Image (cartoon, rainbow, N blue to C red; front, side, top):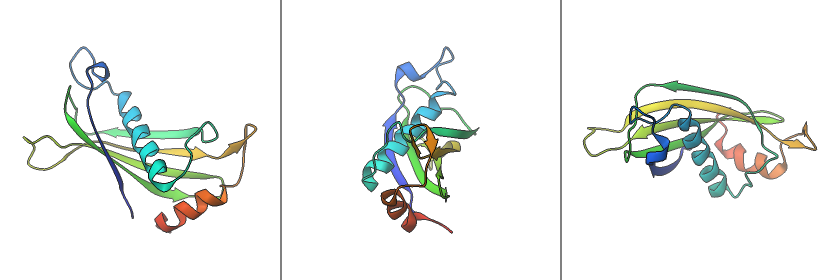
Length: 133
């Protein structure tokens, strides 16, 4: 399985009154990972790829300015949809090893004029080598 990685830091605006990352912002990190994965694969990430299902499991919290590593990978490819997995780690120097903060996934469907359509050939060509079938 190929894992796509991107890095960021927790911005102050992403934290809540308790000074930790607001739980909903982990979905923003997942999206950042998806966008960078698509960019690396030469695919367009746009409105024709709505998310129809998501999941997130929280293990630990991040705080302002924590360095994060986002991992994104193809979990499943179907005829009209695909599921991308995500993991977010804190990679702070004081951690002996990267600390898994959250893991989850998003199911995306390809649509045209509001209706699901078969994955375009360029998506299949990009995803086939990543498939764990």
